[in-house]
Amino acid sequence: MGAERVSVRCCIAGGGPAGMMLGLLLARGGVDVLVLEKHADFLRDFRGDTLHPSTLEVMHELGLLDGLLKLPHQKVMRLKGQFDDLALTVADFTHLRTRCRFIAFMPQWDFLNFLAEKAARYPTFQLRMRAEVTDLIEQEGCIAGLRAETADGPLEIRASLVVGADGRHSVVRARAGLPVEEFGVPMDVLWFRLSRRSDDPDDPIGRFDAGRIFIMLNRGEYWQCGFVIAKGSRDELQARGLPAFRESVAQLAPFLADRVGELQDWAAIKLLTVQVDRLRRWYRPGLLCLGDAAHAMSPVGGVGINLAIQDAVAAANLLAGPLRAGRLTTEDLRRVQDRRDWPTRVTQRVQLFIQDRIIKRVLGAADTLTPPLPIRLLARFPFLSRIPARLIGLGVRPEHVKTPSV
Ligand SMILES: Cc1cc2nc3c(=O)[nH]c(=O)nc-3n(C[C@H](O)[C@H](O)[C@H](O)COP(=O)(O)OP(=O)(O)OC[C@H]3O[C@@H](n4cnc5c(N)ncnc54)[C@H](O)[C@@H]3O)c2cc1C
Image (cartoon, rainbow, N blue to C red; front, side, top):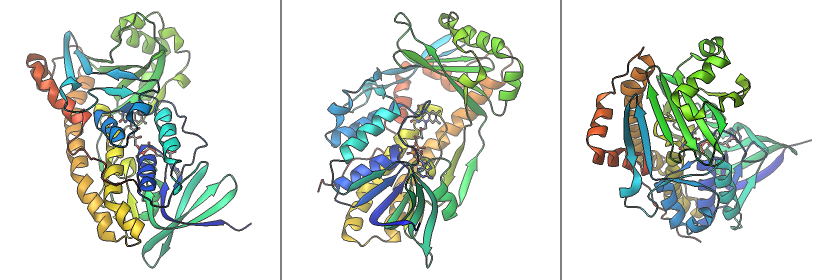
C-alpha cells in the first residue's frame, strides 16, 4: 500500500507543550497546521507539570486562563528549601507583576488536552495521534516535508515549514543534522510517588543534606518525589538495596517514614537522565526546532515547559503572517532563533552555575553541609528571593501573544 499524502502549510512534529501551543497559535492566526504526536494520548507520568506565571499570562492573553484554572491544580506561591538546619524561601512569586503570582501544578496531560480541545475550535487545526515522525523530505537542500508512521500506515506530508517540537530525543533535529552543543551535568534524578495525607505540609519541599537532595511536590493525593543523585550513581545506590533507599527518604522527610514501604521495588522508581544541550543553529531552510528539541534544559528551577511555551509564542508571533501569506523565508526562521537564543543561553548559564556551585557541592559533601554563599545570602536577605522568583516565574524575556485571531 502506498503512503497517504497530505499537504499543509505547517507540520509540527511532537504534541508536547511547544508543539501544541504553536499549533493552537498558528491555527488561531489562520494558518493551516497539522500536529503529529507519536503517542495515542497525552498521558505520561513524571513529566514537567508546572505552569509558571508567564505561561498563565499567555493563557490569559488568549482568553483561556479562567477555563484552564477550573481544572484541578495546586497553587504554589513560594518555593522553600532546607539546607541542613537552615530553612529559607528560595523564590517568592507573590511580588511578580503578573495576573497569577503563583506556579500552578497541573498534570501535563490535562494542560495538553485543554490546548488540544481549544485548538480544535479552529478549522485550520489538525492533530493526529499515533503518528510517529520517522524522516524528513528534502528537496534541493530545503526541507519540504516529512514522513511518519501512523496506525493506518505510512504518511507523507508536504509543508512550507516543518517544526521539530519532538523533545530532547528529537528525530527531526537528528535527521536535519543540526549541530548540538552539550553541557556537563553532575546529576540524575529518581522520580517516584508516595501517598499524601491531609495533615501533611502543603508547600513543596526541597531538602538539601550532605550527599543528598530531595524534592517533594504536592500533587494532591500524592507526593511527586525527586531524589537527586550524582550522575551515573544509580547502580551503586541499587546495590545498597531498597531498604537503605527507603531509610534515606525517611531521614530526609521524617513524616514519610510510615509510608516509604509503598516503594515495593525499583520499578516504581524512574530514572531521569539529566541532559543539558542547545542547538547552535535552530533552523534550516524549511525547518525550525523549538522547545526541548532546540535546547534540553536542566531540571533546576523546573523551567523547561516555560521555555517551550515561550518559544512557541515567539515563533507564532514571527511566523504566522509570512506562513499565512505563503512567503516564509529562512530569514524569518533566523529571527525566531535570534529572539529565543539569548533567553535560553542565560537560563542555561544560571542552571549550570547552580548545578556547579550548589548541587555538585551538596552531592559531594561527605558528612556536614555548609550552605553555599548564594543560599546564605538568600537566608540572610529574604527580599532576594524575588530574583529567583522572577527568573523561574517569568524568565528573562517573557513573550506576549501578538498574533491576531483570524
Ligand atoms: C521527569 C521530568 C520532570 C520534569 N519536570 C519539569 C518541571 O517540573 N517543570 C518544567 O517546566 N519542566 C519539567 N521537565 C521538562 C519539561 O517536561 C520539558 O522541558 C518540556 O515538556 C518540553 O516541552 P517540548 O514540547 O519541547 O517537548 P516534550 O514535552 O518532550 O514533547 C515532545 C512531544 O513530542 C512527541 N514525540 C517525540 N518524538 C516524536 C516523533 N518522532 N514523532 C511524533 N511525536 C514525537 C513526544 O511524545 C512528546 O509528546 C521535566 C522533564 C522530565 C522528563
